[in-house]
Image 1 (cartoon, rainbow, N blue to C red):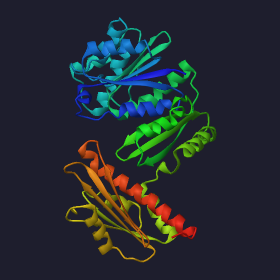
Image 2: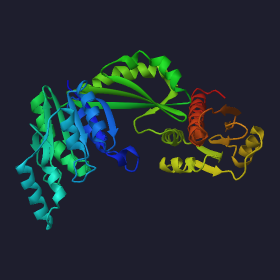
Image 3: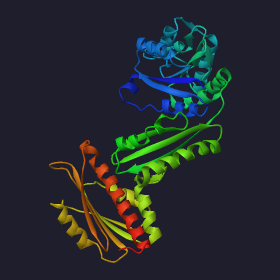
Image 4: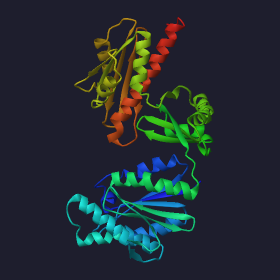
Length: 394
């Protein structure tokens, strides 16, 4: 299958003044047509660097798509850069100029002289009209490879991608539409390196692919299959999921749209339980996430002062939480001095358990880490509590 590289052009992108959404859209669209995306590069408005990047990409990729730099101003360098990359001159195309004139006529105003620049494309290029904007596009073929230059304006790019580029690619590369199906497993309270060690051999698979994405206090394992149909893709994914559940066990708390708060809420609803959570130092994380879980079985009480030690948190939980069999208490306090650590207290009618966890990452990530670690600890204790009651254990 053909290989694609995407080059987004614009100093405003490079400096972070605007967010690049074009490359994401192109990648997601073309992957569904059986095209492998190997690299995405952002280059400022420098024709020499753009040309060098295109030449480099031609050594690796079958398809190079550029976006941006096709406007009428001096700092729109894509046309010249592409011409330089393939050692040809720019040529004026009357047909493109006529289309530009028609666009401005529809706008009710004449073009300025610099708009004529937009009618120049590399010699031998295939011109592509832009019926939704003033920047014509073009395709330069280099043997089996293609350089496709699209506008940077997202709506213009999307229109031309679907109307002109995809039909061209289907014809040139005999593309077959494919389905990309992904399932994401969510894990908490276990590090990325530990997970990697447990499933490293699965991460070497080509199709389905298995990859990790770490967040503070949580790791996602994504399983992605490429197939001719959604049913076939799902059939490819299922054995990998079964193996992941076998290896990673109860570290997995859910998949896809599941959240820790949602999983806990479902357990409480199913088993007619209530939990009161006391928090400190977590900003408003729990309030937001518990609200999203749509349950009144979780009561969150933000503490106004930091308990001086874990025992003080135990006493606070005892004071605020009832002792009925179906009512659980949970305390979570984030302490940032002298080191970042979290105090955890779990209480039910039969026991009180305390735990301290330390955090070694960036301090700004500590509240999210503590919140995820805390919710997962509550999930595990809640599951154990339910299991004990079902088996008659105390």
